[in-house]
Image (cartoon, rainbow, N blue to C red; front, side):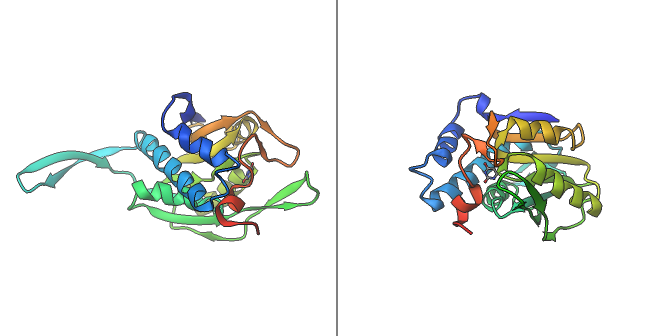
Length: 215
Ligand code: URA
């Protein structure tokens, strides 16, 4: 796995990451969603530099200019429901790509032990396309692996880009063993730990609840 941890360089991204973590600011769910969206936009820009480009002629009012434009066929698949603001952020930049949605939630047997349930999938064909798989919180990594196992039955993407906002080191280690070696992981920041319930520490809490309220 090729890991791109964007908080390695100081930038305005730190402002957005700090606001989504901050207990006083995250109460404003509209601001929380918008910050996740803004992080999605920045991650998209960075990711775009790994894509393929082909020169296209653009007619301006005064002449013709050759511009390299993304030539890959991209499918953006987000994990419901926490993935929706991140999906919007990525779509703000890649506005012509195909969209897919998959649900994944934790079914807790005890507070510490859970399995991942996937109940909903809407996707175009994936064979030979580049799959961008978005899930804001990469905690244990089990949701991403479960949804990828299902997506693989639909078709084999030529390349996978995983997009997350906060990842735990343990989750990165886990997914590295389950995704192809040429998979890129784009993450805004990485935290050290998970708690006994599989939440990222210090993390930000429950991203789905913060964006859309308690279930
Ligand atoms: N999902 C979340 O929303 N937060 C975590 O810390 C882990 C999974």
